[in-house]
Image 1 (cartoon, rainbow, N blue to C red):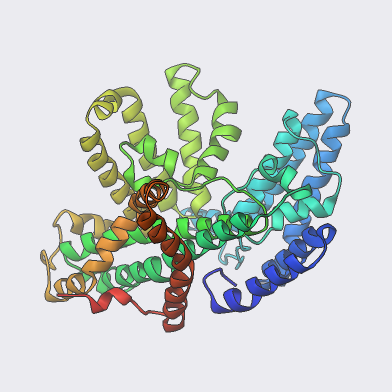
Image 2 (cartoon, rainbow, N blue to C red):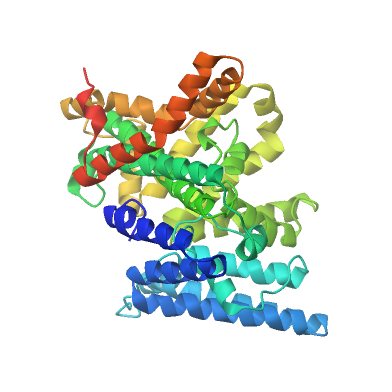
Length: 475
C-alpha cells in the first residue's frame, strides 16, 4: 500500500483518522501503532517480524547502554547494535550485489539467491541506529517502553519513504502532544499538496520520461539527442516531485495528529552550488551522514588529506545507501568530485556569481541524475554519448517534437512547482490580507478551496492512472 493509492486514501487513512480522533487520549498512540503495523504488514507480513526484531534489538541495546557502569560496557552495546542492524541491512540489500560482482570476477557462485528487499528497511534501520547512538552519547534517555519505540520505528507516515526522523525530534510528542484545528488544516493542506505532486505531476513526468527513455529495451539506443535531453529533464523533475511529495504527505499526516516532523526538502533546484543543493535535498539523510559518519571521522577540522578521506567515505556510503548497484556508488562519488572542487577551487567564484552558480549547479545535478537512472552500463554510456550528439539517431525526430508539444505545459508547470514561487505568493497574499478586505477575502477563499481541489484532481489522476490534464493544453 502506498500513500498515492485509492485504497489508502478512502479506506486506510480515513479509518485511521476516524478511530484516532474518537478514542480517548490514552489510547491514541496504540491506535497509531496498530494501524502502522497493519500498514507495514500489507506489503509483506513476514518482514514485519524483521521490523519488530530490529526494534527489539535497539530497545534492548539502548537500555543496556543506559545501565552499563563503564564506558567499555556502553561501547560493547553500541557496537553490537550497529553490527546487528547494519548486518541485516547488508544481507537484505547488498548480498545479491556483492555476490553478483564476485560471480563476474571469479565465476562463482553459480546461483545467486533471490533475496527480496524489505520495504523501508533503509529508513527504519537508520532511525533506530540514530536512536541508540544518541542514547550512547547521552543526548536522550533510553525509552523504557518497547511498544513506544516500536511506534517510533514503524509509524506509517514516514516508515517506508522517509523522512528519517530522529527520536529526539518526536520523543516528547510521543508522550504528550496537542492538536488544534489549525494543525489539522495545515496537515490536510500539506498532505493534499504532496498527493497532487505525486499523482498529477510526478506520475505524468514519469510517463513522459519512460516513453522517451525506455530502460531495458532496444528503443533506448535509437533515441535522438533531443529526446535524451528532454527525457532526462522530465526525469529530473519527476525525481524531485516524487521524493518531496512523500515527505510532504508524511509531514502533513503527522501534523494532523500532533507530530511535527522536520522539513526534508527545501526547493533544491534553486541551489547556487552543489553544496547548497545538498543542504536542500533529502535533508534528513544528509544530516544523518553528517552527524553519525562525517563528524565522528573528524569532519573538516583536520588536515586536507583526512578531509578528503572523510568526504570520500560519506559520499561512497551516500551512493550505496540509495541502491545496490555501481551506478549509485558512482553517483555519490560524482557529487564528491564537485564538492571538493567547490571547497578547494571554485567556491569563492560561485559565491560572487550567483546566476552562474545556479546554472552550473543545475547542470551538475542534471548529469548526476543520468548516473542515478541507468543501472546498465551500456545504456548509461549510450545516453551520455547521445546527450553530446554521439548517436546515429540524429538530433531530433518527429516523435520527440510531438511529445514536447504535447507536454510543454506540464514541463513549465513542473518547473514552476519546483520553485518557491507558490510559497512566496501565499506569504505576500497573507500580508496583504492584514491590510485589505479584498485580499483577505481572496486569501480565505484560496485557503479553503486549495485542499479539496487538489484532492479532487489527484483522485481523478489516480483513477485514470495515466491521466495527464496538461495534455489538453498544447499547440
